[in-house]
Image (cartoon, rainbow, N blue to C red):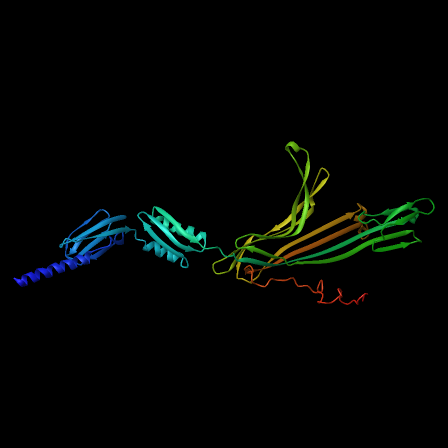
Length: 443
């Protein structure tokens, strides 16, 4: 009988110990994703289980001390487990969407960004810190198909100074021109009792100042470059035969600074006025507008992912063309002769590219002759004048892009080099303000 009492006492102590094992400060939190299952190991024999919503979580006993929990839909439920000893435990189970595919997608797309994904029922929350707003917007767009509502709580780090692109440009223009001129003027001051002058009018040489039966006088205004006169024959000849070659070379070396993806332009030339007729209340009034001409270069640089520089280049060369000018109400409006190129190039930092082939060849020929006399054999050339002008302009552009960053506050500031100092500092205690002079006098 005494042994039976001891066994009952042991049973009571075991039950008390089991009660202490099941004592909880609050419900246990469990999270699982849709379509996945977990097993709860219960420390005592299970009497029964119950869930608050079987459509969200399906719970069933597998053995006497194991409970299989399977997530079926979004939501939160409460699971209650009773033991055979009468104790009960509570579990708060939250079923979330399977975010592993989305997390892997975020990691593969933004490997250097700190992005965390969490879910709450049918909404997704993005937390962490990213380097730019563009990354934040792209991350929200990637998460949109995985949830009905996307809460973007990503913090954008302070933007660093953008990398600048320095364009070192060398612009060279070579202009060659050649002119050939041939003209003959004949003057008679009384040869064969005839006073007169034969000229094609291209180059004036003499002007009669007095003509009479005695002696005639001509004033020479332009002896051209060959002049001959026979007093015994009273016959003079003025010949212009010139050959001229000109060579002009222009070199400019501008430096342009621009941001990534921003356009930079360079113009060498000027502006010419154009009269514009007004309408409306100012009908009939003429205002002046100015149009640019010359050499214009437009660049739009973009830094690629491998630190190459892609350039959209638009060079344009325009010049005033008075041969096709328009005369309007006393105004002479010249036409514009232009040459344009638009292309894309990609090169590494410090590499150079050359734009050439912008060549303009022009030939102008002017022929003047006296009808009839110019058709005579051999002597007909004396009654003709001819002028030929040839011009050849070529433009060459050399561009070298570089990636650069702004100077930091602690960096040494650049200075402008000067071949000679503008002002020499005065030494302490010295009364001589100008080096090379003596006190009270000049050098």
